[in-house]
Image (tube, rainbow, N blue to C red; front, side, top):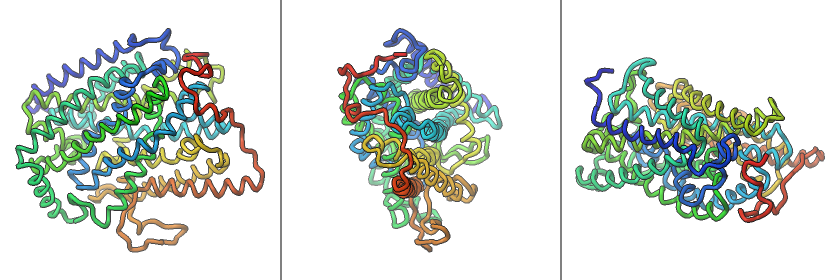
Length: 549
């Protein structure tokens, strides 16, 4: 990395905006502050009092991340129409999760639950099942945080910070040290406040990009024609501006699996539990699809990058082209230097906000469902908060391991691999909000079956370019699907999302073991919740006070 290669104007604008959000991150400790930050209700959930606007920005900042700005357009650039799966999944998502989320909010406010594992602990009276859910949540969050690292690193690389070896990652580590410090001090209030800046920047950049850039390349019709011509030259012949017979099932299962998975992630639930009441959640489920419009517009930038002749920057640390730099390079080529700096800041801050929320959510799981349950049962609220702050630091830097050891062809697979993992909590968390039909033993057996098979199938998937043999994607050819040696779809090249296969196995095993356990009259554990708990609103006297001991 030499000083000659640095884009000084872009770097300067990026640094100023990054400094602004850093200041906001530290100031956030005093913003809408309660009596103390030494309680998970305050540090980890922002005092549970965010209204409609704050929740909209917070949840939007949490769900629409560097994945949106970097990974989706990169997938469209490399694989064509398949990358648009992210659009229908965010459309069908909100109707699916609308009612479960308000039920989760109510029961959590009655009993003081901070994490989904807290709910499972109360619903089934089993600390072991809660432990499984907590560990699953932490493991699933790691690759999602890693995806944010990838997005931020792509921006830094585009601005010329593209060194080799450990020094090549130095700017990224500095950025995450800053993130770690203000998250440690301010908790969830930091990303909530910064989300206002992040989303404002993103809206401006996207609207400018989709209005300004197409005109430079002859309009959308010409852009689509150029993209299809480029796809036709690829040897695989499996990509294009339209889906084909091999990837239609993958597209549908990716959309469905991702929709089911998104609000099972602990960081997604953290934003919901931080809201003031049920009406806030209802308004957000109606308003959040506005972000989906932006997502669709962003995805099409993958086609624009083809028309612009964008070439991914070679990662000096690995020696391979980094497809995640597609959109940053496009912005750098086609925008004035000062506005490219604004765009890079939008992407960079778009990585920091969700990374902060994710690390807080994972830290809450560690503190409530591992530390307090097994290591220090008499932990005070202040000790819990201290543990969560320390754990949030560990989680951030632990996520770097996913970049080092798991190197998928498309960074979006980091999120999809995490989706395979978190989907295995569907019966114990989402379905349990409505019914306790599944037996405790059935839930554990189903989780083990789904997790084991899902991880195994992910292990068997090589990258499309053949450079990596394991954990290189989440799309499985039906030909590779076997049931105890039987190949029901032998010879089929149609692909399917591993997450849907794994969660189907989970549900089948959970149901079968439940029937057997009921027949044997096995103990089912206790349920501390009541049907009325799932309908309580903020004005009820049954709501547990915030930061109550």
